[in-house]
Length: 103
Image 1 (tube, rainbow, N blue to C red):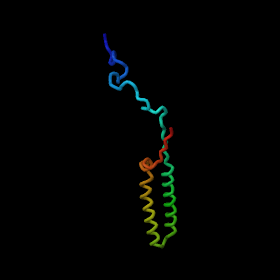
Image 2: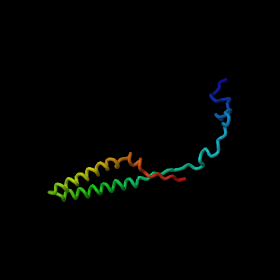
Image 3: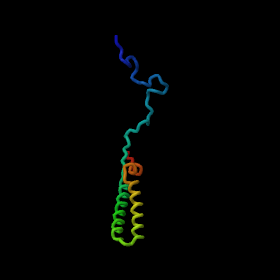
């Protein structure tokens, strides 16, 4: 006579354990929650930074000859480039996305 694993035992692995066997009501929600993520706010920030950079680049092209103004514009462009590198990536989007839970 061959015996399979689990044969001769009850189907409930919690059988014989005090308080085991029966599920506690409320342990699982009847309807699972669904979450949606929204990166529109972050995408708008990145878009605004790109537009601002483009405007500064146009101003820089038009500021030929004025060294002080060119230096100030280049500094602003560099600041925006740094900010774009920080924000225009998936990690930043995940960290700053809006999460909405729907039940």
